[in-house]
Length: 296
Image (cartoon, rainbow, N blue to C red; front, side, top):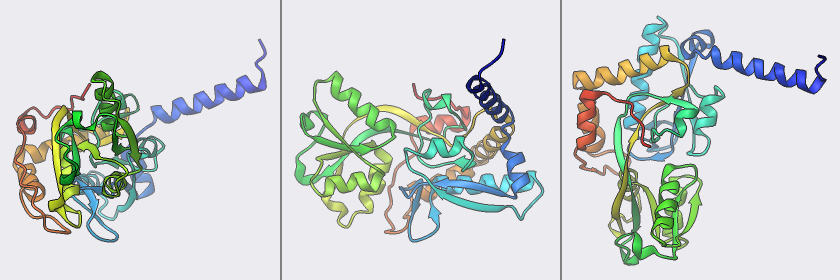
């Protein structure tokens, strides 16, 4: 049977895609190009954020840098160049799957929906959706926001969580989405939304970076516990083993505890805020279990 030109082209494209997926090998890519590209977030305090112009800092950034050290050692090439790429909640997965970035350690929830496109390393944090609002708003919980505007960040699980909660509880929330976390906070600060629904740990970090942190408060019940984990390309067992070896090794050696104390129990730049957040029961248990189990 003779195939049409369109059908032949489609089969070729599928074949090329299959070959690309099958040959996914981040370590080989890094060895061949002499560089590794790390993703970073601009406002995910204290995980990955810009404390000033240029270089990102944070808990997840330190994990990424530890992975880079391990890659250089594995490939026996200390001259490997590190390139940085800012990502958002919306573009982080496409930029990973298309090869623009090689590793994304930020504030990304490990869940089953995302696992269809990427794979995750060992979970390194656990959080839940809450609300950031002005103290003058009078908002104490989700019911206070019925039929009002609530901000979240585009491309996040939090936007999905708050929509579902609104439907299940007949709140008729008007969800408005910012392009990033700073943009979502601005929606509240400018009066275009009453509150910002996001992971509670990020809300505390963002609150501390406002001009007048005392004007803000984090309120509301925590909606579902979600794990954060670094994202890698799918079907790349060698690189996954290396990243898990780094994170798992830090958890076993006590280095992870030190890193946690540095970013969650001590003053951090740029305003020297101290989140003073003790390690959660879930995370403490995962230092031993070292699980990459996703949220559902």
